[in-house]
Image (tube, rainbow, N blue to C red; front, side, top):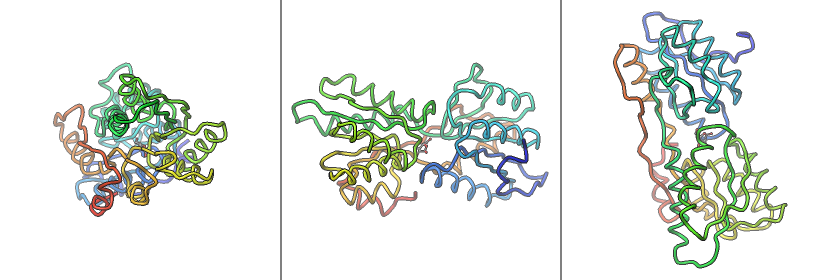
Length: 308
Ligand code: AHR
């Protein structure tokens, strides 16, 4: 079982430092690349931290095996981004029994006993979904008739897919003139966005807007819209979540209409929390990132200060 795991990327095994085990969820998006880079850079330059980091490559069983491996290696703290919300009770109970505190980073879990994890560091995904919907409502306020929307969901069962959808629908359910005419499940990758958008168009739907649960899927959808001979951002509006540099380039090119910010640069907060937990300190249960939205009108200016 241990042999089949991806190799540990860094880590010296020093006993004096705080051993921090990080189980990365995968490599599905440019957001994830920035998130992993932020954790590695922050931890590797901190002399108090001995980082062990492994990538589950979008596989829950593998992520559980990585966490078990960290428990066996007697790390001081484990941080991980759960691939999906459920299925973590057993392994987290094992970590608790071993006295290892768990930091949930970026995504939350649904477990019977919330004392199995100590803190969550990340975004408010429900609010991100609301922000996307509010932008649509605001932009359509002087337009009569129904606004049709196709939704491209992220990984089935994952917190960002469930909660972004929830927030988006919550706001639109209070409006009479917005209709989701297609909703397809992807996996936060460019390829799934392209494939699902092509499928929606092939099935005869031409929505006025696409709401993609992340930028990579939105960029894939933009490609599919172009391949179908239409102009993304004009014939079909495109909105998404993350606000990566690539999304800004697409906004500047007029192909993406807006992106809700989701900040992946969580490394400093994770390392700070790991040190505090290792020192036996109490830390907040939820550490939520403050975020905004970005649209085409200010994209050219805002991209200059973008860090991911
Ligand atoms: O969990 C955060 C989401 O996962 C990001 O929005 C997405 O880009 C990533 O893959």
